[in-house]
Image (cartoon, rainbow, N blue to C red; front, side, top):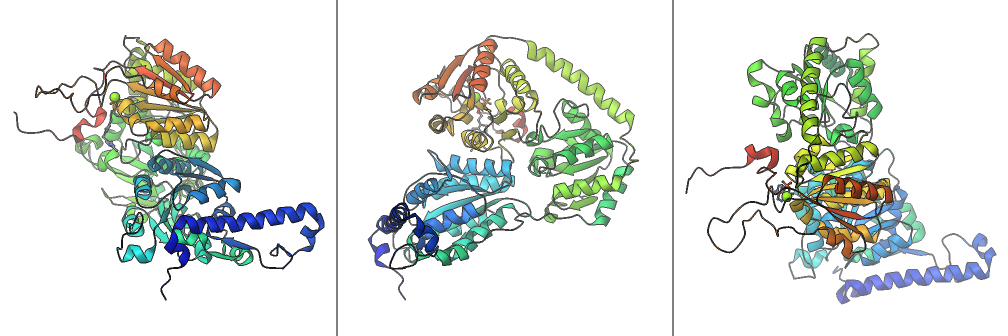
Length: 618
Ligand SMILES: Cc1ncc(C[n+]2csc(CCOP(=O)(O)OP(=O)(O)O)c2C)c(N)n1
Ligand SMILES: [Mg+2]
C-alpha cells in the first residue's frame, strides 16, 4: 500500500495542526463539562470524554511526552521547528521543563552534561537534517565521553527520503547517526513510541553509558490511537542500569596484586565520578592509604586538598608506581596510553588493575594484569569487602616521598599565585577563581580553552564530586555554554564557566539563553586576544591578521549586557574577585571579560607534543 496520506502530502505542519486542534477540542470539551457538571468526572469512564461516548484519543506528540514523563524525564533541551515545534509547546504545557537554545549543538551538550550529572539520559530535541546534524556533534561527543543522552530528532518522510525524491530537509538521519553513537532507533508507528523510548533509555544508561539517536518521522506525530491503547503501549523502564557484580575470582586476583605492591597508585577517571559511589571510593582510598590522581572530571571526588592527593607530584607517581588501580579511567591519550616516558618506561614493568564496566576496554593499550569488570560501585564495594579490617596501608617510604614532592611543588605554586602582575596572567586570574570556589565548594566549574583549561585544571581545587565539567576525552571546544546551562538547570547551583576567548566563541550566543532563563551562571572569558596567545604575526605582509589572532581588546562583557545580564570588564585580580563574588552571591547572569596578558599562553597549552611541526624550513 502506498502509505502517503493526505495529511503528509499537504504539509507536515498542517497535519500537526490538526492533531493539536483535535487535542485542544477534546481538552476544552472535557474542561467545560467538568466545570459545568463536576459529577460527570466520576461517572464517566476515564477514556470516554463526551456524551456520545467516543473514546478519548491521543497522538504521537502526546505519546512521546507521556513516555518520557513516565520514565521520570522532566527536561528537554532543544530547538523548535518543523516537525517538533508543537512537541516543544506541548511538553511545556504538560509540565516538562523545555530549555530552548540558539544552536542545537549546545542543546546537545546540555543534554549530555545533564546525563552525566544525573545518571538519567539527557534529552536533546532537534528538527530534521541541519538541526539533526548540529546536534550530532554533541551526541558523538557524549558517546566518546560515556555520558547518557538521547538525541530525538524529527525527520522527513521515509518513502520520499529512501527514493531520494527531494523532501523538505531530506536526509537518511538514522544511517548517518548509527556509526556515531551507541545505538540508533526509528519509530514508524505511534503504538511503538513506548518501546522506542524504552529502548533508547536502556541503551543510553545501561553498561557503558553513551549517546542514543531516536528518529521520529514527521508523520508519526499526528498519528492517533485511543488514549487507553496509547497508555498501555508505554513502558516504564524497570532498573534501566542494572548493577553488574564483579566475579569473586577477579576481585581476589586484584587484591592479591595490590597486596604485594610497593608503590601503588589509584587513578580516578570520570567514570568514577559518574558512578555516584562517592563514599565507597573515598573509603577505598583512605583505607588503603594509597596516593591517588584524579583525572580532570574526577577532581573533587575527594577534595583536591586531601593529604593523599598526588596531583602535585603527577609526573613522579606515574613514572614510579609499580601497581596502578584504574577506577573508571581509560588508558587513552590523556594517560599517554599507559606506556612510554610518562610511565617510566626504564623503571620496570608496571602492573594494572582496571575497574571498568566494559570488558573490551581491557588490554586496549597495554596488558592488564587484573581486570575487574562490573559497575564501579559494585567493584569498589567488592574490593572493600575483600580487604576486610586488617588491610596494610601503602608503604610509608612511598607516601613520604610523594608528600615531600607535593609540598615542594605546592609551595612553589603558592608564590606564583600570589603575584599580581599587570596585565593579569593565567595564574593571577585563576588564583582569584580558586579562592571563590573554595568559598563556594557547591559551585560547578565549567572549563574549556587551551591554556585556560590546562592552568585552571591544576590551579582551581575542587572539593565535591561532579562539580567540574570540561572538554573531556576529545578535548573539544564548544561545550561551554551548553554544559553551563545544564549544570544550572539540573542542580540549581551557581556555575562558573572558565572560558578561553576562542573557546567561548563556539557557544557565545547562548548567553542569550542564559539571560532568558535567568540562570545563575558567571562566565569568565580569559581574553588574551586569540587562540593560545594574541601575538602571532602574518609573515606574508598581507593585511589579514594571523589565523590565531582575534580583534584586540574585544569587550565580551557587552554581549551579556545586550540581553540584560551583568557585564564587567576586569583588568586586575581585585576587580575580577569582586565581580565574581557578586555574581555568585546574586545568581545574576554575568560575563566577566578578564583581560589577560596576550603573551602569557603557550602554543597548544600542555599538549604541544601532539602538534605536528613542519620539517621544512622556509
Ligand atoms: C571543536 C574544536 N575546534 C578546534 C579545536 C582546536 N583548539 C584547541 S584549543 C583551541 C582554542 C584555544 O584558545 P583559547 O580558548 O582562547 O584558550 P587560550 O589558550 O588562549 O587560553 C582550539 C581552537 C578544538 N579543540 N575543538
Ligand atoms: Mg585565548
